[in-house]
Image 1 (cartoon, rainbow, N blue to C red):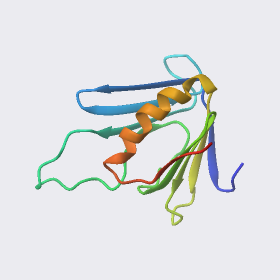
Image 2: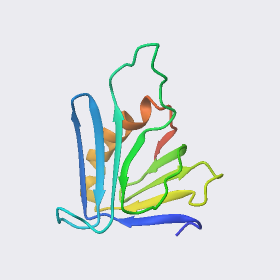
Image 3: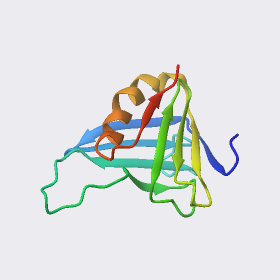
Length: 126
């Protein structure tokens, strides 16, 4: 594993859009209260000029990290793993999320929506 990266082995991935908010969540088990989880969220609503656009999609909750860095630098997605790279000024500089390949298609659909408004670079790796 990459140095200074947290890891999450997700057995469940749920992605959906509700009330113009894109949500992608990862959980270490199928229980209602998993030991490790990560919930990513971004509003798809166009904010007025009075509201500052976010420079990062929101990490709503995390059972993986104690303190989450504010700035996401890059998101990389492969058939069985996603890496979220944070700004290197933080102590933990990323999260490696491993998941079953059956979730890849759903992640390819929803992750671009999640990162697009925040202008976070996003790569799908072959």
